[in-house]
Image (tube, rainbow, N blue to C red):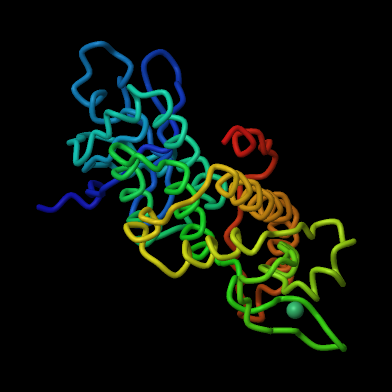
Length: 289
Ligand SMILES: [Zn+2]
């Protein structure tokens, strides 16, 4: 007889916290979305599960459904231990950043196979890659796309003469381009000049724009061959953080607003389900990168 209370799933451990004397609550990124589960006895020295449930580990899990509490991990086998991410301080910091971005952009029960694949690949890359900062930038661009906040780097998002500018962004010349998180992407030099006083708008060098375009267009294996100066990397890191922070902070509020809207609309059959970050967490970890 099939026991319907038991199911199997792959999962990546993105967060762990202790519960009671010996248990651990795990936040998992799975192909079905983000979930919290409990690993009973995981902190006991002789626990057979514990070694498979380290932070960043990718495991094949057997779980028992629970109606009253978190589902329970009954068995765990390692798919990819990602050991290097726990033994190496620098790689570990990048890995922490990758899982935190996932954790903050994705609410419980949201997410899916593409985000799972992205995170699994990212952690595997992080174990070996030398160009970690460039890899982090590529990850951000893909994550933003998958959560519905894809920055527009190809056409200007500014406004001119009462309409959208939409000029192709050709990263040449001396004049600065702009980054406008509010409008969701890059500004041509003319629109940057027009909008530059707005609080969220920041300048973007032609080289930084070009790198963002490459990060979005090309697979990482090609981007990693590009020569990128430390100064440019720093500019792109700062710009990406500006964009991401803007969405994470705004999202806490829009998330609330959307949920209210959703409640109001129930009965009309409408459903708005924006990706939302857990409310109330500080932006701290982003600024450490
Ligand atoms: Zn423009």
